[in-house]
Image (cartoon, rainbow, N blue to C red; front, side):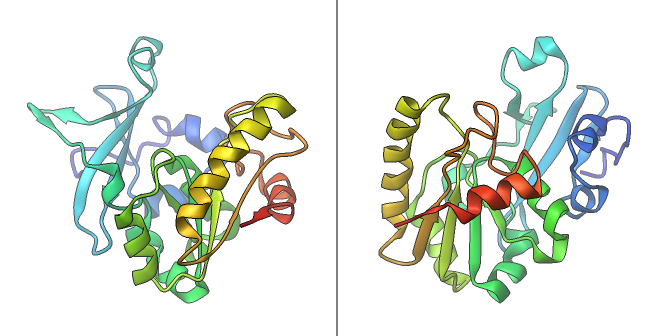
Length: 216
């Protein structure tokens, strides 16, 4: 990671979306000037680097996949995403203190949560998708979490799609229900664009969706 820098211009796209400098620095976000990509390291609970993803910025690279594991010097820095959470190293103390975990799909949502509520109050985690695994449950138990909030993306554009997607989100929530108090977020008012994270619209919209969350 020392090969990459904290470059304001390279990270400008995320700064313009509202992610704060303090959150970017805490999560060791860097810029890869050679590939024109944002470097996103992933650490385990104890702070060991387990993988690195990049968010590519050039259109020709985005076409191959916006987010891909770093490939450098013939080494692919990928990791099995179901084995841990993104953000667990940086946020486990806050989660253990508050007994709450908000589970998002992507890394940016965890950074945005820390920007809005403060890096010391960040209880966000990301699964880099929507899978809930046995390892995820074990880490939540390790952190003595009592309440889990699933904050998945808005994968719906109308009420018909919303109802179908909600069935999937509810099924995911039920996997956690034997162990924790669980709720999940649904954007009933369609306040956010299609495939947005619930926190993409800022604090007011996020808290409005949060107030109307479904309890499992």
